[in-house]
Length: 304
Image (tube, rainbow, N blue to C red):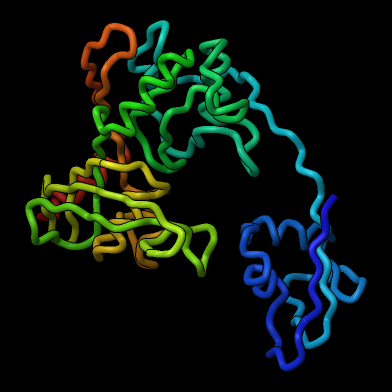
């Protein structure tokens, strides 16, 4: 177990404990800090307190960080929408509300757990928590994802993503009527300094990110876009669309407060294309829009 300690400087304005810690321990996520507080691992002047405690001058604060428990993905039986499969790769049409791989807060019930049960073996390049996973899509994003069954296939697909010979296309319903027929967003993405649970366009500790888009259909107050990725940053399309003022409909993290209630963002990975690692054949797959996404579009058509 490790410890972090602070003695609060004189002259500090009273501030909530959770807010104070999110500033002082910026490398720990806000949700993890909240968990430590709730479990009594945070003490002020030798006593456990609540998140709402107001930190004041000369307070002595200590965090006991428990040893991390090793996580390992275990096989779980589940229904998978398999679009294609052979001895090297498997292409899945991922549903909404499914996390791709295990992690803190999601130790089981993920796509990786289902793949391990179905395939029995996946490439080991990404370790025990992300075996076979070359690229990810968000929990509430639907659509195509490829996983690899051996290291040779994994290395081939990863190289294709780096060299942009593999391609991914998405359909995104956004707020606002896009005035341009097409465009490119070239803006670096990094961790949001104000909210560690979010990403943002920023020049600080960021990586380059490029998203191309073109208009598929305009509605009265929304636009259906086709987006393609040159890079694969976390939440890339969602962050970029918010950045240019056209946030994705139903996005609980980056969308406006008043957005259509859709149980997640209207973002679907509809096309995936890559060169097969063994046959060297170009393979392209498509996934139809989920019924819920299509129903939203049908409703917008009726209002036109």
